[in-house]
Structure formats: structure tokens, C-alpha cells
Amino acid sequence: MPRIHTPARAAALAVLLTAAAATPAAADSFAYRDGYDVHLVNADGSRSELISHGDENAYPTLPVADDAGNVTVIAKLKDVFAPDLLWIGRDGRTVRNALPEHGPVGLNTGPLSVQMHRDGRLLAYTYLEHTGIYSSPKPHLAIINPQDALAPVPAIDVEGASFAGWHGDRLLASNAESLFSEQGGERFDFALWEPIPGEGGQTVDLARDGRRAVIGLGSRRFVLAELDGQAPPAAKATAWCELPDDGKDLYRGGAASAAISPDGRFVALAGQSGLRIARVDAIGSGPCQLQDVRLVAEKGGLPTSSGYTVGATPPDDGKAPDDGPKPDDGKQPDDGKRPDDGKGAKPAKAVTITRARRRGRTVTVTFRCAKACRYAVRVRRGTRTLKTRKGTAKAKRAKTVTIRGVRVVRGRKLTVRVTVGRTVVSKSV
Image 1 (cartoon, helix red, strand yellow):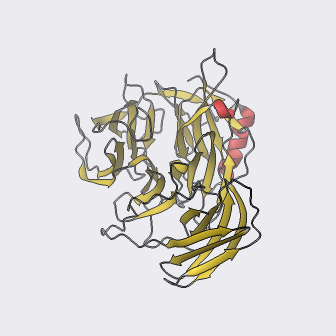
Image 2 (tube, rainbow, N blue to C red; image 1 turned 60 degrees about the vertical axis):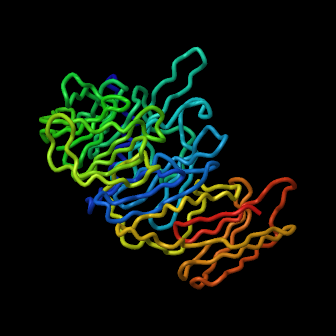
Image 3 (cartoon, rainbow, N blue to C red; image 1 turned 90 degrees about the vertical axis):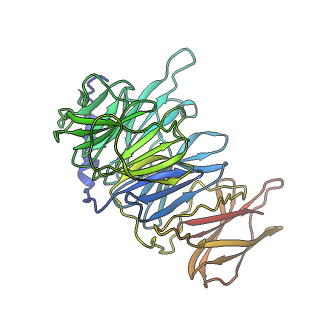
């Protein structure tokens, strides 16, 4: 990857960095995808939380979380090639944007990698720009604030990187063969970084203090490295071991996935048999000696690390997410998997639809909340919300909501969606 100087873009990024005050990490967690859902789980396995869910028609993927627990995902819709970007805030707000890219967005490939700066205002991602059937795609690295309304093309975008990550305020990158790091001066002033001499690197995930890293050396080869504590690109490995190969991540083509917790004590590994988290006490040579290996999800994958701590009870202030990647045909799969509270108990569903119907321009839905709740009922056609009704419901009592004056198009199904906190259930009518 060549040395890149772009003063205007560097100045724009410097403004974002100055405005974003970093919050010290309280503890560690991993965001991951489980089937058509996205979860957060504490690195020590104590608690987990369902963030967003969907089905084969609309689902979230490539989740990343900041230190405050805000989660950003790529929202995929069936038969729609260009993905959306969805920011899910802890305060109940959501921000949805078309993912900005150069060139013909509908033909581009990606995102290939997504990494969040710890303050949540700088999302670095990579993609391949399609330049014609007779030309090779161009790899790009882009940086955006997922909480803002985004322009069609990212203001901060450079060519040459197939992977992007962060170590503090420094960007890390790869050209699919070697690792590069900003040198700590001018933005996008990259230098070659070889933490393990002669090995190169395709991906890297660093602990906050820079003394441990998970380095991807091939599609299914990861090493856990002990570093000398210097800042990249000067940091060198003093010891490294091979992480186990469990085959490809269920959601990453032919590649595997691995991440390290911010404190460097835990690693998350995703392969054919799902997502596992393990504790690392010491790093030697040969195969890594992992402790307390536990299976988090049989369909888990795409782990990324965060300094957020999943609390005992997810906040519910009644502000319901509006535009998450949820199904619009009423199909809502339930494989029985719910967030684990660390004690093996599975909490009851926050809300359940017992009946939904449409007569003419009137839609009626009956549902039950597991406990007293604030709800939002939305009638949607495709990805568009036609009518919304909000209110409160008593615990375990049937609540019937009638919405009149719905615009109906002959031959088009509608979806009624009930949102309680972070839980969304839907049914076609």
C-alpha cells in the first residue's frame, strides 16, 4: 500500500477526531452475528444481549460496537445488492443511511471489513469499486460518522486497502498481503508494518495497550502475538502461537474470523461450528493454549471487540428503533435462541403477536408484553412505514391496537410490526 497524502481529507478526519471525546473502557464485549440476528456478549461470558434481528429477506450483518454500546450494522435486503448502514443507539435512536461509496454502488463489492473507533464517531470500512467488465475492481478505504446523515460519496476515501482497523487514533490497513500503519503524524501517512518478520498480514486486531494482537496471515490462519509494547509500525512480536482452525466463518466466504478483547485477555474465534470465546493466560510457541473455551452460538460469526459492558438489564426507555433491517413479509423465524444471562436461563420474549388482520383500510393487531411496556405499532409496505401508533401496555394482558386509514395497494401485502425496547416482532396482513 503506497504512502498517501490527502490534506483536505486529513483535515476533515482531524475535525471528527477532535470532536469525539474518547471514553475509557469499563470492560469488554464482542459484537457478533448469529443467523439473522446480532448480539453483544461480555468477553467473560457473564451476559449477552440481542441487538437486532431479521430473517432471510432482511437482516443485519458485520456488527461493530463502540465503548458506549452503540452498534452499527450493515443492513441487507433480499434481492437488493447495495446495502444500507444502520446505527442503533443505546438511547433507542436509530440512524439509517445508504452506504456511501465511489462509483456504481449497485455493482461494488463489500463492505469487506468494518471497524469502529472506540468513540463511535469514526467507522472505517473497505470495499471494491467496480470500474468495468474489463478492469479489476479497485480496493477503497473509507471513513464516515455513522450517526450523521451521509452524502452519496464519502468525504474521506482513499484507494489501496482491503482491510481497515484502528489502534487508538491510528489507522491500520492491509493490501491483502502486508500490514500498514499510520506513523502518528500526517493522516494517511502509512508505513509498512511487519510485527512478525516475513509473515506479512491480511488483518490485525490489537488490544488497547498494544501488547497483544490477533493477526490474520491467510484466509484461515490466525496467530495470537505478544508484542513489545511499541506503537505500530515499530511494534514487533516477541512470541506468537497459532489459533485453532475450525474452517471458514459462516458469513465470510472462504475466510475465518477472530478478534481480541480490548484488555487482551480473551479471543473470539468463528468457524464452521460457530463462535467460541476463550481466555488467554500466556502466549508460547506452537498451538495456542486456550483456557475456558466456550461455545457462544452454533450459528455465530463475524466477531468484533468493544469496550462496552453488557448490563444486567438492557435499557428500555420506550424509544423504539424505526428502520432496522427487519422482515417485511411477516416471516419471523424463531429457533429458540435468546440472549443468555450467564446462568443458562432464557428470558421470556418481550412481546408476542397473538393476532393480526387487515380489513379494507383498517389494520388490527393484538399482542402481549412480558412486562409492563411502552410499544410502537407500525404498518409497513416494503421498507416504508405507512402508519404508526405508540402507547403503553400492561404486563401479560392482551393489547389490541387498531390503525385506520392505511393506504392500500391492490396485490401488495402489508406488515404490522410491534416494537418493545429492542425487540421487534412482525406479521403479514
